[in-house]
Length: 168
Image (cartoon, rainbow, N blue to C red):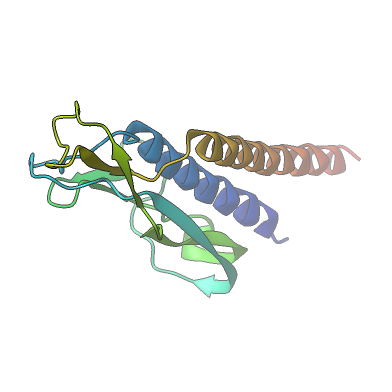
């Protein structure tokens, strides 16, 4: 019996969790005008792209479902979160699903605003800020949250159907 529906739902949940983490990072840095080391530099909005998995055998280190597994690590040089997006289901054999292809910096990631009172404003009173729209980010967060919930519901429904089939 194949359990690839759990691979698909689990990989979808992992991908949506990473998308929610990326959106959270964008929202947290909505007014960031400095790099982690204190140097001048604007935070650039990050976006996530997904890739479909078809019968992919992958050697995966830690499982996201294992206790005390390293899920994310902060890189102080770049200010980015390095996320362990790997999943370990069916001993590394993932029969279908989705995975994060790339977390990339969005185009047009900087906007210039006139604010002479800002400490990082230039001589003319303009300051560079991240081009992050809070409404768009919240819509993306709700969308990712709903997709996560849908995947969790699929896994729960399949589990219930399997239990019912065993009782016949």
